[in-house]
Length: 449
Image (cartoon, rainbow, N blue to C red):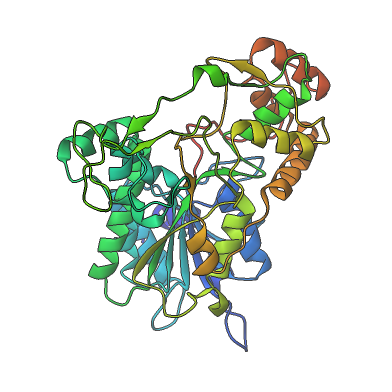
């Protein structure tokens, strides 16, 4: 290998001596994180460094929130781009080889950066089954391309009366190709995430020796270092005060008429007893539940997969599984803003402006039914942080962030309409033109999940 090629390899494979096992005793677990530059991935990297684990982080080497290395030099780093599948697979193969030993193998792979099936297949081709578990960061948007979504979220005959829940099995795609295509057009992100799950399930069967796979279906993620800045924008709006309050739907403009279960794209439906369902009526909720998960809970859940105590309760994990990971509390937007106001030390409930077409930043998807947390609680024995505590942590971080990350604080405030924007900027002590040297997250178009 020529000197130029060696220099290129050194720039791509950085600090791999961090993967060396300590002399004596059991080696620390080996973990491969795909992504890991910011937000959830950053939280996981920091947690694994503290564990400690032998950690390798694979990403494009971009700078977020003032650093391109959240591990502070304690993790091996591989610069690779999933947009070149062959090169990405080859890089993962080489990184795995560099673990050392006669049969190098990752105890855990945590994948934050796959958006579709080809992304997953490239990773599996490079790993060749050399891992104990593959945790894929998926999304509750997979339900937006499901058969149930294609039915307009009509309550199912087997659902608990007045309290339908979206469970993991509800991700099944519709049988009709035309409906699948329509749903993909409406939510390409959810379609890609479900495609990635399907590719992972299929790929695990093709690569002998691989461990099980698990898809973490996340709703809107909130926490420190969130590149979307959406929750920070809501925090700013509450800080603006009651004279320019956040906007919510005017309930008089969102009332939904009662519908029959037979109103299903022209198809007939049957009740559980087999009788025609035209007489079975329901009312969709007038408000949409908001589901959230704390970024630190995502990190805590994945870290826990390294411990035997996090195994399933009664049996080894299946070859592929999926779990909704979310806070148990799923309020509507009004209730959520009340919780955020309380967490921020402001008057609660806050004054809200009811308008027909409000300016809102959350939720990402609007479903009439709550996510089920039963599998998370009972099978994986994971208790999420209460939403009120999550919001308090976020509010404290936003307040400090106005000093530490003024450029990003301003970007989040700029999401507001002009009048509350001006008040929020003033009350946060920001200036309209912060120094270009301020630490800043990358733009949302560049941000890795």
